[in-house]
Figure 1 (tube, rainbow, N blue to C red):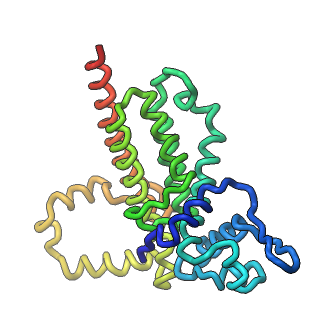
Figure 2 (figure 1 turned 180 degrees about the vertical axis):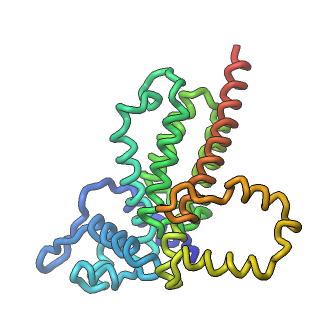
Length: 280
């Protein structure tokens, strides 16, 4: 399922995204409602976290709040607008976690220290990975129409500051951010889907693998001759589960992500080194 953000009224959606964190209460006639934009958005996130994006509706949010769907439209005009607000609001959680760790991340201070940039990027990427596993519905929101909310920009700013202080140029920072963000997003999708697979299919990961690997041995008796390199890799432990207590696909996704991340950081380091050597 792909959900496109930015389908609400641009003026109203952007105003709500950038309104700040203060509650926005209804001011119409009748008893004062104990609702706010933030409460509606946070409740919608709860629905998506527990039931998935397919269960999200104004009615479902209203039921959790003990209200009708119609009563929510004073605060959020449509489901499309709500999705934008949910996405950026959820990222606020991630940014707050990052900012709470600022004292432990020297590269985020206003200094010229470039020594710890790699550790800071690893921390940023790891936090983003865990965020997506907490909120897998956010992976369904397409990046082709970005939300353009404050927390998304704060996430970008946090990493850009690290890379800028490390000595990377403006265009390289933009490309590095896109590469890092999409590496995390692409690889964590496998881990998130692996967590959901048993609920959706009714078949556990072990049951699925054992059934099909047994069939593979029967239908491809000449596998080792046809795929000699893959066979050597298997014999060398390439496909072994390092921790039998952890789901195989989730662990494999994490290890592949870490490999790609470190390779990407090596490339960024070479860019930094080139910039330093070219400086007068």
